[in-house]
Image 1 (cartoon, rainbow, N blue to C red):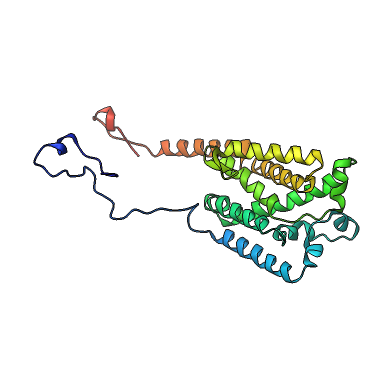
Image 2: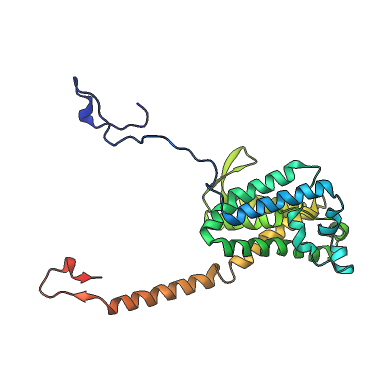
Length: 265
């Protein structure tokens, strides 16, 4: 019988085998990270709404997409923000896989951090990836010169920031590489980062790869410069030391009793 464990004495002849542990009345299965969180829900619906709007008004891509030349020359400073909500209307998988990644990794991170920090991190990595793209487009290299005139769209910069955070918080959590075989999250992000780097210097697909690298870089710097990283670890250890020191002041000792229950906390 599957799912039931029996003791050795349950197998005696003439006795009805009884499970050692009570059975669950019903088996439940869950797919993905569980119930969707508030910020992830809003981001999903916003991206879908903008996608539908661009299907109707195609010129929105030129206005809201990230074109470094327009940001620098025309001062269209909203583009490093708005480009995150645009996706290729001719390629449904673009928005599909980005929103799938947002749901898969964003829900757990929002639960871990809380909605406020999650939204802040998502915005910083997305905008930071856009600004990285602009800075790279100004470099005097042939491979990066085309980025200056190219239109960058998509939530991939922020998504790569989420991937990095997920790998730092859940390094051994398996992720399906190319939806084929499981790879620990830490190696998954390393592989994607290496692919993005090689693509960015090869010239083919350099625009998107630069934005991906920007999301990884900004996410890593942000998580290791305040809330996370070495500085936060020192603050945590110091706070823990102070709490333990204060606890010792309130320890109660009972006289004339054995050592095993001497301290009452």
